[in-house]
Image (cartoon, rainbow, N blue to C red; front, side):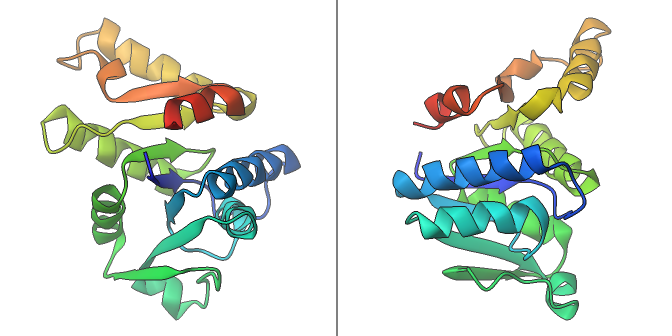
Length: 177
């Protein structure tokens, strides 16, 4: 896998451990000469990830929605910029341009991206998976809910067909190699 999309928070007001884990992933992406495909913001985990990836040799592809540009929140680290009209367009471009998606801790936007990828996979638009990077157990409640969806038959196939979970950087990088 060469082009890795990462969904994550654009918030600067989060615990330092999440920033550190984003930076560690960025270092790995750079040292392994991967492409980072991400939302292109100059804030939060997005910028921490992109900066460490760039400093270590990764190429950076930002998929930037118009609203981000209008508010001056575009990273200056981008090697390639895709301009998207809206968030739906952004998700489609990120999915098209990447081999796999990693979900670092994030908010509503990250959830939207994760569910977009999983739903599209569930009906056969692609075979790409989301890897939840479960830093400090961040995704535990969501993973329990997804399990409940299966147990109560609200999904037709095992959801493990659409995602994997990595609790450490080592587990994550093993899945990305």
